[in-house]
Image (cartoon, rainbow, N blue to C red; front, side, top):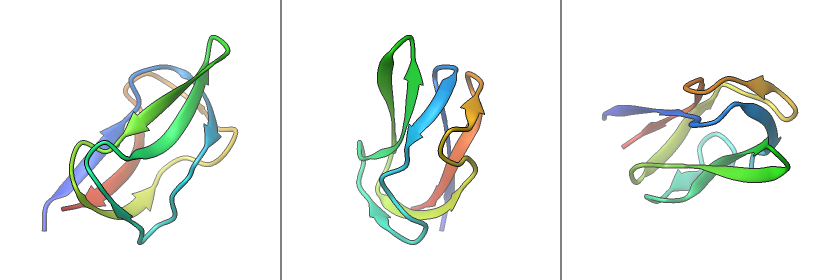
Length: 73
C-alpha cells in the first residue's frame, strides 16, 4: 500500500478534524479545516484510501506546507 502525505496549503489554526484514524476517505474528502484570515480552508485528500495518521490536533497552529495527515491507498 502506498502512503500519501497530506499537507496544508495555508498557515493558520486547525479548527476542525472531521475524520478519525482508520476512517475511509475518498478523493476530495476533507481531512482538516484550517482557519486563516477568518475563513475555514479545507485540506482535502488527493486520493481514495484509509486515514493512517493525523499529525495535528484541534487548535494547533500550522505553517504552509506542514504535514497534516497520512493516508494509505
